Image (cartoon, rainbow, N blue to C red; front, side):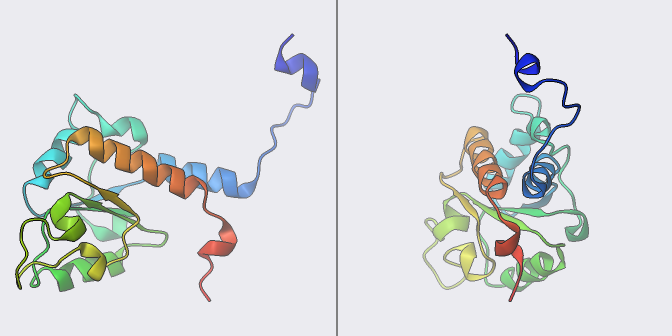
Length: 162
């Protein structure tokens, strides 16, 4: 006895608008290419055939902030680069998300000095942290899946700014 027999001939599928919108947002996320150091090589390999992030709807990394809604900060951010990072983040359309990839982007890593920002969350709000030095492509994919779960749980009332 299948689902069709239990439901009858309804002819429609019901869902909520929030579920549909969040499903569309997760399956069409366009990441912005923002590789700053050695983590960028691991980010590029996550796009390659072995790991294939295109199965998550991320066909290619966008070079323009106006075409992307996910910023993956891969590597250390210097104090000189921080204003540029913030400007690119401000140019991204809403809703937008940030993944801090690697120890340098998350907390400064081994670079505990005046020239490196001790965590990219000083500059932009971070949604998901991916640990490692450098993190493997599997870790980045796990971070993307974690972000998907976060986006799928978003409510419209939480997105409205006061």
